[in-house]
Length: 410
Image 1 (cartoon, rainbow, N blue to C red):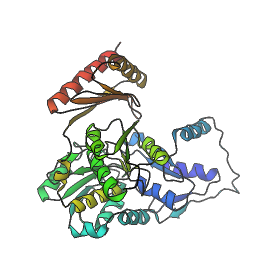
Image 2 (cartoon, rainbow, N blue to C red):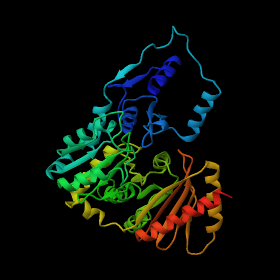
Image 3 (cartoon, helix red, strand yellow):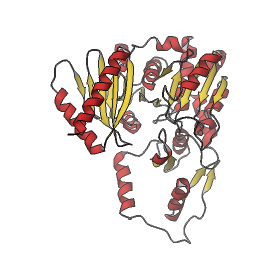
Image 4 (spheres, helix red, strand yellow):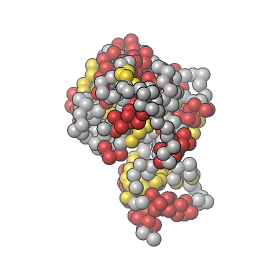
């Protein structure tokens, strides 16, 4: 419904519109790649990404394949709400959208060509992909087959009936993890609704957050694929401290950004670096696309496994171990902002803490860190905690939630 409304609006304004073959369905990174490589002026993607259907929205992509910046987004919204847009006479309008048939195949081939497919094929990998019954069903199984990987698919039939919640988390990927372990597969991966995230599952059935996968991939890319690129990683403040613990001793600078992959994309564009990622499974490989891409992430991870000739669990065992708790406290955004400001007053200037305020409040202590920030998509305060033990992480998270509720009630 929203897709047809977008097409109608663009046609009435005199734009030439091309809809992806197959009814407009393709992963977000496939459309972004096609905009860049096929020379389109803009792309428009209708997606709720990892969110429930009521959060469906419109993502506008610029000619470089990156979402437009926040300022341009605001200008479009102002034009829309002030009704300053122009219509062309019906006789001059394009009356029908064309079909663009190249998007899916172009994207699949591009991902495969970015890695050593012969090396990957030589390992005879067996991999499970959980597509959440969404658009990555059209691409990730094909990518695996072209890489010589035996693909096992779970929920890879596009359907309006959800198989699980669209955000890939240890909870939503529990069934996929049990299948990986039961079948003795080499790896599993879970995508979100629009296919720009990838969460890894090792051969033991353990689900790993994206900052774990991202840290390993960043070190590998810096050493093996982009040795001449600036030794710099961009990651959101929601990523684990293990990122700095693991990468800085390897000579890779870690630059913190506000949450949101668009912030990472533009820092990479302006300043350069080897990679960018978020803890939610979004990873950016600059030579391919300056936007997060679940299919590319999986291909790179398989190449890294093949190159190092190890099991996935052995790779993850190299990382410092932190235990995470992620939760949210329902409240209006203005209250969430007040809670964050109150916590800033409490922690700023306290000895023994490292404070980051680029997005909410991040506090790093000796054996833990936490982040509190107003959500950009829901009326909630997001709370993330990591500590060296699960009990310590749970204790800190419960304490923060209780304090946040108390502060919001003032």
